[in-house]
Structures are given as C-alpha cells and as structure tokens.
View (tube, rainbow, N blue to C red):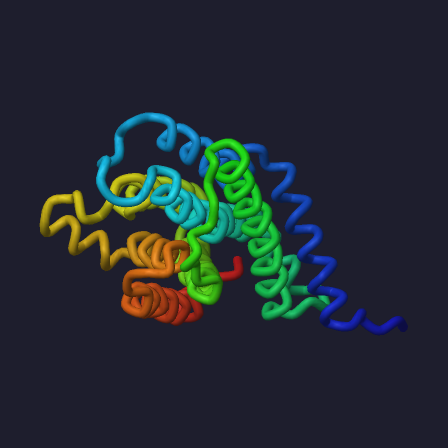
Amino acid sequence: MSSPAALPRMVASQAGMELRLTARRGENLFVTLVLPAALLVFFASVPVLPSEGPSAVDFLLPGAVGLAIMATAFVNLGIATAFERGYGVLKRLGGSPLPRSGLLAAKVAAVAVVEGIGVAILVGVAALALGWRPDPSIAPAVIAAAVVIGTFAFASLGLLLAGALRPEATLAIANAVFVLFLLVGGVILPIAKLPEPLATVARALPSGALTDALRAGFTGSGDALAPLLVLGAWGVVAALLAARTFRWE
C-alpha cells in the first residue's frame, strides 16, 4: 500500500487546486482583481476628494490595497468555503490524507497568491497610469504587517461566516458587509470627513483599521500601532469564534 505524500506536497497540490478553482470563477476575479483597480483609476480621475492633504492617488492606493485584501480574504474565501461546505466538498476532503490544518494552510496560501497579484496590479496601475511614485518615507515593514494581520483578520471573519451559516446567507452577508466596509472603511472617503460618531465607529471597524495602517505605511507617517492592534484584535476574536463554531458539513 502506498503511503500519503508529504504534508508540504499535499498542501502545495491543494493550493494549486484552490487557485485553479478561483481562476474559473469570473465574478470572484472581478471583485478581487478588477474592482479595486477600477475604483482606483475612477476616483483618482474625478475631483471628489478634498484638495488639501495628499494627492488623490497617494490617498487612494492604500485604500485600494486594503480593498483587495478584504475582497480576497473575506469575500472570496468566505463565499467559496461556504459553498464547498454546503456541497459536501469539505466533508469529502476530510476523508483524504490531507489534514484540516493542511486544507486551511492551502486556502491561506491561495489567498496570499491572489493578494500578491492584486497588489502588483494596483501598484502597476498607480505607477504607469496615474504617475504614482513611492513616498521617500515609505515603511515597507508597516505595510507588510498590515497585509499579514489584515489577511489574518479578514480570513478569520470569512471563515467565521462560512462555517456557521448557510451558503446563501454567507453570500448575502459577505457582500453586504463588503459594501459597508467600502463606504465607511476609509477606502474612498477619508474617515475624518465622516460625521461623528460614525467616524469613531469606522476607525473601530477592521476595514478602517486596515486602511489607516496601510496609509501610515505608504506615507511613513501617522500612527500605525493603534490600527494594527485593532486589526489584530478583530482577527483573534474572529479566529477563536470560527474555531468554536465552524461546521465541516
């Protein structure tokens, strides 16, 4: 009897399958790769942002990166996992040699690849089409921390929905929350321009914390620690709840 392949090989194989399935879902590719870039170009080209402060592209690029992370780690992962659970795919995978930890690692690896492609597209569009140049004070370590913690937080939120709700409910709630994050998460409009107490609520949301941390990293100024702590708290709480409530079938 042949023995199962080594865990890293199984994870890599499953991650490849996750990427192929993602590539076949055109609506997911639109939300994760096309929509953030389209919003970046549109809002950088129309005079809707305040004239004072950073240029439109300097303000919008971190928000677009945050939007790509939310779309990939929250919407795409959550909805896809919910329907896999509803169709019994996760149950069948549970009978394979790939452990559940390996399945989660494969999903996270696929999310990381899609995010990397999305960020590369956004930076390329900003630089080539909108004339963006990195700020001399840019803080790559802060940006990396925001991406990693943001991915953890939004993936945990996505899996929390996917493991506890029916696929149709996950689809509706994930899209509704995504629109909420888009509107009040500082992605397009500055949180400071929102009326109180809405601005306070927005800063406490994971979307607001992610965009604040990314802007601090891209500009090399501002407080990055507080939003990173908020983002990390969301991730820890969501991960603990997901671990307790996730149903594999």
